[in-house]
Length: 142
Image (cartoon, rainbow, N blue to C red; front, side, top):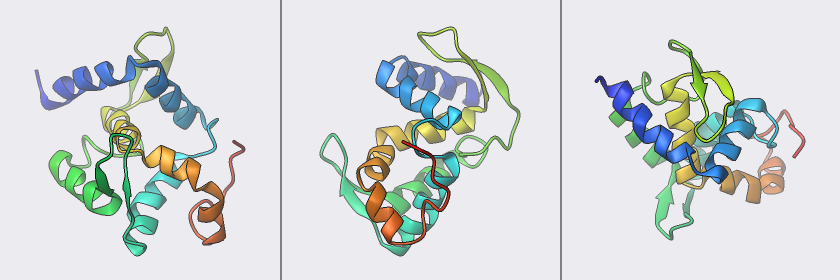
């Protein structure tokens, strides 16, 4: 078993939860109001520029850009990437018969965004992020 197989087992356990797989499908199908490009821009640019820290669902203090850099160092782009830059696979979403074309790296990145309340933060501050004039230039209806 290689690193990506081990990671995929952990990812499958995460996406078996209905709320997690719903967010996954919304992001990949572009139906939830947030695109992968929005997530990536928010994490790599907005959070760095604004030194963004907030409390996650479980109450821990989370520094977005710092945690992202740490995860990127730990996983590398091969296993942590919002975009499908490596070998795509047909992923059967756990608990469904839905198949999506994606990579382990993309599934892992989205899992990180869900676990660390990044998706929640963007949804809860949607209008503020627009007013600051940067993040979500392309609006996807919510």
